[in-house]
Every structure is written in C-alpha cells, then in structure tokens.
Image 1 (spheres, rainbow, N blue to C red):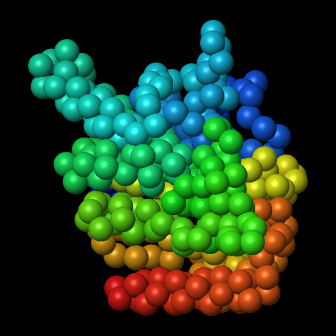
Image 2 (spheres, rainbow, N blue to C red):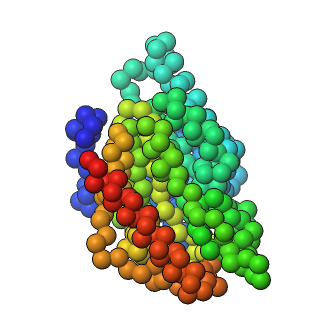
Image 3 (cartoon, rainbow, N blue to C red):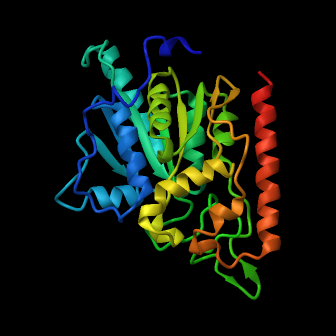
Length: 313
C-alpha cells in the first residue's frame, strides 16, 4: 500500500463525514444513480476541494441559473476539457504556493467530474494528456452508459446490444453493435498510481476509493457505474438493485489498480446470470436468447481475464 494512506483509517457506517458538499434540492430525475454517486464522492472528498465539471447531466441539474447545488468552488467546462482545466487548476495552485501567495501546507484537492461521453469519447484526449503529465488530481467518470442529457444517444461506454436513440434495434440492427470501452484499463495503461471502479450500491467502498484517490500523490482515476432510470427504461426505485446486480453478475467488477497491480475488492464466486440484470431494463428487451448467451460468454471471459491480472501479484 502507498505511504499516503498510512493515516487514513477508512470510512465506516459509524464515521461518515457530516458535510454535504452537494446541496439537496437539485433537479435530478427520481432514482438517479449518478447524482447519488456524485453526492457520495463529494462527501468523501470534503469541503477543501475545487471541482471541475464537464457539461452533462450533473452540470444541468445542479446549476439552473441563478441557483447552484455546489457548496465548494466549482467550474463548469465544456464536454471535452474537464481534465485539461483540472490540470490547469492544479498547476495554478502549485504556482501560488511557490510564490508564497497560498499557504504551502494547506491541502486542496482538485477533482474533475465527467460522464462517459465526456470521458470515453469527447474528452479522452484531454484525459490522456493530464494523466501522462502526472498532474496531482482525481478524475471521476460518472458512467450512465449514454449521452443522457441530450436525448440518450450511444457513447462508446454503451453496452453491447443496448437500445439508444442512435442505436435503435430493427431489421438491420440489434442495438449497440460494439462492446463497452474499457476506460479504467486505458487509464491504468498510463501507469498512474491509482485506478478504481465503484458503484453506489456499495457506498462505503465507493467513498473509500474516492478518498484514497484524493490522498495519492499524482493522478488518480475512479470509474463509477451510475444507473439511469430515464435512459435505461427502469424503475427509479430499482437503481441500487441494478447497481448491485451489475456486480453480482460480473458485468461491472469492483477492483483497484495500485501502482499497476490489480486487486479485486469484491470477488464474485457464485455469479448470477447476466439475464437477471438485462431483463429488468427496457433497453435490452429486444435481445434474443442467442444474443444474451453471447453477452454471458463475453462477461465470463472478461472476468477470467481480470482474475488472472489480480493473481499476478
């Protein structure tokens, strides 16, 4: 483990932070898993943080003029440049400390938030550059698996077979025709100190990973699975159930990559069939039994590959 975590004892149900950097009263949809993930991440980070937020659902629902839900310094930026702006903020803080215009010992965490479109598609170049340069910041991808705020268009994180407005099933299509892009693996390929996956279904795991990401010296990336009832055609009250099923079916494994080494943080020894996860969502209702078997085989193969990576310690 890294030396920066020596004094961090971890969050538990008995010692959760009382601060709420994200105020209630925002305009998120009922049952939104993304805003819950955002709230938990900010609770873990605390008030000494500067947040950079790309255009997306969380920007729209949290900042209808003249109101804001952000109780910490917050910058809204374009879809593609959250990582670039966050790296600029981090560099500016270093310069101010060097010139004696900001207390050297005062810790301020810089965090960038973006959706899967702003991360895996439009913002991937800026993210790669910031990770490669080694800026000391946290990048959090809130992945709801499509461009939800603009009308549920597919992204490269949309899962195979899913229906969106730009991947509709029909005579010549079965929905999304490509497999979900593995952005955590891309982040890990930059040899950064810390990469993790998380979900609001396991909230303590999520908060501890975000805090560890903030404490580490250098860039850190956290990919958070974020159910979207509106875009997925699910019941709002099912968001946490779905988030848990994604882990239990091995569709979304929970793991960390610390200094290049993989650690499974929740090993699933008796997985549920992926059909249990798929059948609860309208975006998958057109899939045939053969297509569901294909998804099951892919999920099994990907999990076995992850297990081998974790065993190579």
